[in-house]
Image (tube, rainbow, N blue to C red):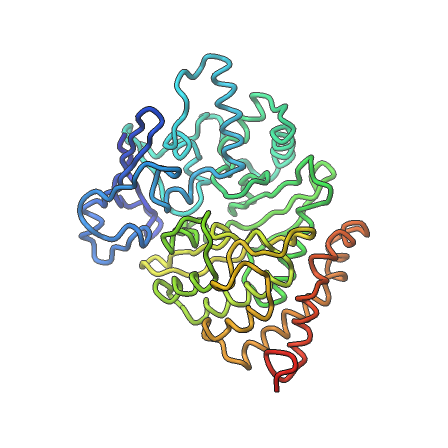
Length: 423
């Protein structure tokens, strides 16, 4: 099957190329080819570094992922696949669907309006890909209760056909396993992150608190707020792949680096990618190092390469996106998904400080940044209380913020060197 690929340029869709997909007995493969009109324009740019600006098809071999990584970034992830799988099971049960869905079915099933990033698909009928159910659309914020009710039903595995239809196109391309949906508040496209029926603690409040701490530490975060829906907290975040309605081209760190996100990689690898492809490398290297230190100190051990992302500046260069999915995880082994360096996965503040020069950060700047982060970490309990967390939730989180590395960071921040005891 052949699909036309567009990307919004100057608020209008421009043809970039063609995606071709084949499925044979469960074996899937694809290729992408740039359109001549895209290559011949004044300033074309590559969709990702792994798709250079050349004529002719560029093949992606059959394997666990069916497409070049830039397309995998914007397809349904854990939560989205859960919804689609519920719908597929219902379709098989009712006889509506005879053949199992393939990877292209999943990729095209996400609504064009709410799809992450700037890539758009136009199929053989000449129209931009539409929702699975023509009655579905990204709902206004006023319908958030219906979304939460449907998301809870999906999590409990007792969703009705109406629940599934309502969720099918409302944010299912957005990454992660937890329940979420896209909503519109006025003209602003937003992401709503819901609690799960299986939660022991109010996860949206914890994430809002951590984003607040990150912002105080000097990290760029999306605008966000908590609202109460059906007596439960829901976290609303501005979609940072939109700017006043304009779509912004998006790529995960795995895509920028051209690597398998399931394998071991390092923050220093991301730094190399920033040097090679970054629009403002110096600024983003400092920001990345700040995020790495913050990640260590708040025990965010789910920092895999799909939880780091970049936004295209519209001319082919990339900027680090606002931070997202930053969550403390007490009770987990303090091993990072993205290592600090090749030394190993340990969430070590000494390793982070030793790596500062690789991020173009000198001794004085590293210490100044560390002092700012440590000052925020020390205030985690008052910040948690301001965000409405109760005594049990604060006790649960204590292990994530009060640990050996936090004590060592405080000691380094107050010392005259990057290492305590070193003159």
